[in-house]
Image (cartoon, rainbow, N blue to C red; front, side):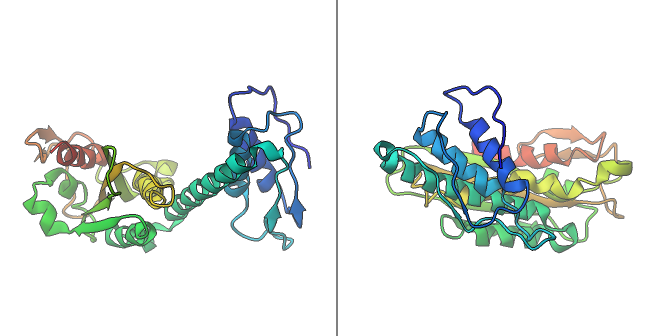
Length: 278
């Protein structure tokens, strides 16, 4: 099977990753697959890009004719780069698995993923790297997260906040990641129209991506302390839903007039960024 690469740029490995992904996704690949780097500089970055592409492109389910992704892929490269190549393949495999885990969270049907269930899924995913604290509705109210609570008022399942902590020994710095996790974004009373609601279940993709990244921090031996703050709500047009014209006081003391209830991300992230700043 041949995949065109177009015009290659020697310093950019992305076309290799994309080509490997296309090859893996284009149909059943059985047995041993052996890509070569005959016309491409066989750097560790190029080898890692191929490995990552094959992982990300491979089908996660069997094809209709019973074919599945190959059991073994051998990348041919000079022995001079073998040690760097091994590290690149390990890193690419680790990153690809984290990406696939985040994809699986986004693919979960919204009726199977309330804010609390989503939080538990992310706690399980990140348990090898991170400690976790789950703050419930009452904790959010006490801490002044009125924006997050307002965004989730119309749903039967209350909002919550998940805090993930990665703490290596002797960290070189500290990074805080803030993510919105709206398990379904209907738009609230400012209801999304027609097909605009079809992607509502993916409004939690930001939180899922952060959880995927946090899940591999220990495996990649990241030397920076990481805190993830993930605001989790479901945005629905229930009887107690926020209304256009409501005024909400955010955690930082800023008053916000609601003109479009579909803007739940602004309310959620405002509270998280204020917490991160403190």
